[in-house]
Length: 194
Image (cartoon, rainbow, N blue to C red):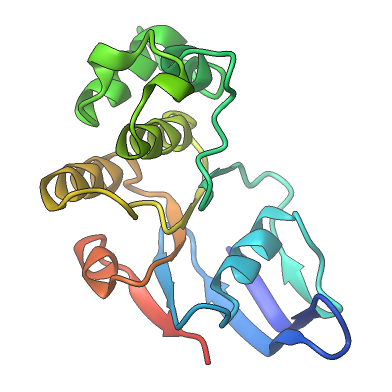
């Protein structure tokens, strides 16, 4: 369970992003944050990742909670191939190597034929799918998705949503999106931010 209890956060005293924000995400639950740009969606995700700390209140994350994320930026390692980027975060499953598991996810996302390419050789949409593959291949308890499907055409977005829905079964998902159809597809409870 992930708990935000009366969290206040601001990058300065004059610019408070969140004030007395509370949210509980139960094990296996999917939650989508909605709101206009600047409403604090990414801030909530960064708090959940432990990348920033609240000015007041607290974020309770179990010590054993394994997290994986797709950030707004792809954050791929430029000197590693897409396969190497993915294998780096992959977990072995019984009877499958990390490389085989990575190739399975890359294939589901339609980019297995680019596995030996470097990020600079890929289109924006392909980089987006590679970042998603890297997050999905790690068998985390909490999957954080920050505008994970932005920039994808409709058919590719639907394939990525299907893959995410299947691969994240049983995991908590905390996501930020401007497209509520993505939240609906994943069966996420929508939490509006002012």
